[in-house]
Structure formats: structure tokens, C-alpha cells
Image (cartoon, rainbow, N blue to C red):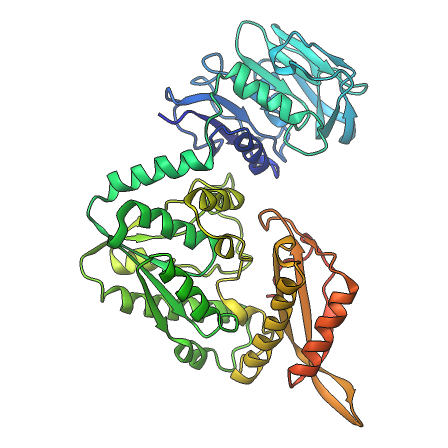
Amino acid sequence: MQEKILILDFGSQYTQLIARRIRELNVYCEIYPFNHFPEPDPSVKGVILSGSPYSVRDSNAPSPDLVSIKGRIPLLGVCYGAQLLVHSGGGNVMPSAAREYGRANLFYINNEDLLFTDVTPGTQVWMSHGDTITGMPEGFEITGSTNDVKAGAFKINGESTWGIQFHPEVYHTTEGTTILKNFVAKICGCSMNWTPASFVTSTVAELRNKLGNDKVILGLSGGVDSSVAAFLLHRAIGKNLTCIFIDNGLLRKNEFETVVDSYKGLGLNVVAVRAGDRFLDELEGVSDPEKKRKIIGRVFIEVFDEEAHKVRDVKWLAQGTIYPDVIESVSVNGPSATIKSHHNVGGLPEKMHLKVIEPLRLLFKDEVRRAGEALGLPGYILKRHPFPGPGLAIRLLGSITREKLEMLKEADNIFIEGLRKNSLYDSVWQAGVILLPVQSVGVMGDERTYEYAVVLRAVVSTDGMTADWAKLPYDFLGSVSNDIINKVKGINRVVFDVSSKPPSTIEWE
């Protein structure tokens, strides 16, 4: 039985970060909306209540019934979660005189309290709240205070329930990891043995048990998620897995051949499908980003469905869904407003009447890579940069033509290979070239030119949720710029994108 911590999400921007910090302690955890959480079973060792953009005094404030949790198993309220415990217990939570946001110090700590074992008095914490606990209910004991917040932390006497007004999961709370470790290890009694290797072992066993001799198909993208999912299934069911890798004509230069050869060399059963002309015929002249995505998604489903029907007696469709996708689909406020359509195999299960298997649905992106390492996958697969599902279609701004696509592929290849040759590829999370739908004047030899401009985009990140622009050396950027302008006919200007996410996105479309 896999022991776990449950995190009840009240809509905080930091909820996923709590989960990541717990998992870094080798403790498995799951996030559930506050209004849709399961009854705790013996595998649940403790529960964490997240922060929230709401005030507990709001008429529509999240207020779940915690009768099955509170006083029965260890409970930790963080920020809003702490205020909720006070408010529901009959205490007072009032608007702060000034919003308390940023660094503070716990000048008072009760080190006899298990939650603060080995935590230094005066330690820095991070506050982010507009309300303050002004009156404690009977039986609530203050265990930590800052200069401005007397009830910085508390424990309820006679039960394993704690509340902290600050955020232990953020980097600025310098001993936040110690506090979370005290909760999961000393208070909840977790064994802290959940590792990528243990995940691989248990998942392979579960897949064998669930799938038996059934046949499975999986759409490979060449990316890390689908690759790790494929090799997990390959280890579990071997030849009963068929992987389909479709060339949509929008991959990087030589990528189709390189990826197919690497998969086959590692023993995967791969069906390679060249369908570039089919995609490009439909995309010719299309400039609207959303229409591009819709066309690519529709044609992908058509091609995949045709190829899948050539495999007899298939019962399952495997997908490389990862945990942020799962969390998003059951978020507190329902699925987020659509910013852009995501290109995956959505719609295929219903169309093909297949059951879905998602071996990575419990992992974050960086955990997928560690699971791949535990599986023994080579670095050239695990260290591949993320690549958008619609491929170069959304890096070719404006209308798509075969001529412009070839220009983009050549420029992109010069940039990516340049990163590799200069040992910069692994220090960048994602990189690529964007072809702009504008032309600018230039001079080559004795002639004026009027040709296209491209943007070099490179970012550093952990999981793509936030990203900063990569500080690449000027000499390198100059060399790449010269190579692109001199070697790619039709391009006479190169610029470098120095915007971060947020407020920008990584992709331009």
C-alpha cells in the first residue's frame, strides 16, 4: 500500500509547489480540489490545506466539511488553510491593516513543538495574505510569531492539527523544507521511500496486472513524456505495445529519421508514418494560430486512427499525460479558460472505442525524467528539449508555405546544433527559432535586400510553468546570427527574445 499525503486545493498559485516539495522529500502526495476530495483510507498519512485567493470571510469562501480528517489524522493548514481552521473553530480572522506580503522572521518559535524541531528562532518565512488571525479559539496554542503577526503558527491541543500563516513551500522560507519534513516524517510517520526507481517498479507491476495480454497502441511524439511512457509499457508488456510515430512535416530538420532510428535501436516496436504532405496541404496559407492547431489535431487523429486500425485486437490507447494536466482538468474552478488548444490525442479514445492507460499521470515533468533515468533511457532522449505538439507550425507566424517552412527548419537547425556544439544545450530548457511574418530591408554585397526576420528564443525553467530567458553568450549569439543570415536564403535579420514567462509565453503563438 502506497502511503501518501493529500493536499486540498483552495485555488492557491502555490498548491503545486507544495506537492513538489513533499515529493522532493520522497513522500508521495496527491492534490484534490477542496470540494472533491476522497474519504481518507489507511494509506493517507496526513492532509495539507493549501492557501487561497479567497478570504474566509467571503460569502463564497471555500469551506469544506473536514469531519473525516480533523482530529483523526495529522492536518496542516497553510495560510488560508490556517485561517480556515481558526474561523471554523470560532476564532477571529480580520483584514490586515496592510497586506502582509514578503519576507518576515519568526522571532518566537516553540521548538518543543514537533513541527518546529531543528528550526532556528528568527528564521525567515514568506507571507502572502490580506487577512490576519486576531483571536484564537479555545484550545489553540500559538507556536510561532513574527513582529507583525502574533499568530504566525499554532497547534490545536489534544489533536494532531497545526496551522501556519506563512508559506513553507516557497524558496524564500529558508527552513521551509525542514518544517515540511517534520510534518511528513515526525508527525505523519511517512517512511520517505517513494523514489523514481520505486515508481518504476510498482508501475510496471501494476501495468502487467492491469493489461495482462491485451494489446496497446501509443502515439509517440519524440518528447520525454511519450518516450518514458512507451518504455514503461515496453518493460511491462513487451511486443504487445505498438508505438506510432507520425511525421507531420512540422518536425525539426532530420528529426523524424533520427528519432525513429533511436527508438528502434532501443527495441521499441515502432510504426513510422510519413504524412507531411497531408498535413501541409491542409495548412497551406493558414495564418490563424488556433486554426493551425485545429487542423493539425484533426489530421493527426485521422492518420493515427488509420494506422491504429492496421494493428489487430487493440484494446488500450496509451497517453503521456502527466500530473499538471490531471490537476488542471479537476481544478477548483473547473478547467482553466482556454488560452490555446493543446495538441494531443484528445478525441481518439471515443472515436476508436479504446480504454485509456496513462502510466505517467501521477508525475511532474522533472519526475518523468528521473523515472526515465531509472528505466535506463539514454540522455539523448531524456535531455531533449520540450517541443510543441503543433511543431514548427506555431513558430512560423502568419501563413504557412512550404518555402517558409524550409527556411525555418534550416535556421532552427543552425541554432540547435550551435547550442550542442558549444555545450549550451543542456543548460537551456527549451530553444527554437520563430520566423516572423514581416520583412525588413538589408544589404548583402552591393545589393539591397528585403527579406524575413527570425527570432531566437531560449529559456531556462523547471517545468515550463514559469521561465526566464537564457543568458546566452554574446559571441555565440553573434556567430549563430551570422550563420543563419549567410546560409539561409530569404533571411536577413536575427533578433534575440529577452522576455520571461510571465508576462510572456514561451511560444509566440
